[in-house]
Length: 134
Image (tube, rainbow, N blue to C red; front, top):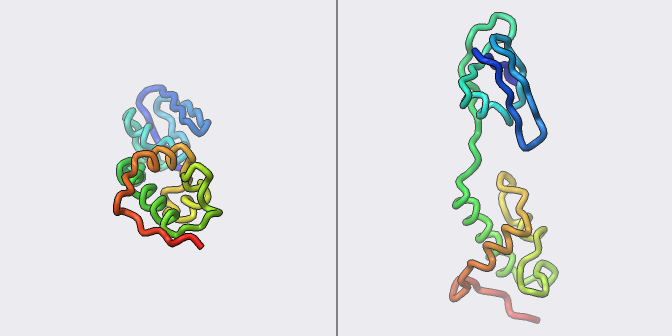
């Protein structure tokens, strides 16, 4: 966790359940999920003992949603091209675990809603070479 300092009293909340009150002028430990939000409100990273400023911690921004959608589509194509009937639901949509298995770990988890949305938008004309049914 990183210590931050604010010149005014601040309350930060995240969707992961963290709620942090940052008193004015007091170094406060906050989780990494709230760093971006703290920086937006003007907090600075400090050493908790000396209160000297430190360089801001690099915060990873979430990936571009368009890039994520492309990865989900590619994973769907791989599952369909493999042709394993255990990986496809009766309606033709690939099962969640099969798509998750094919997508890179940094983009996990993939929800069933994402899979269905991407599957329903795909145009399969000439895009896939499926294995012949046995």
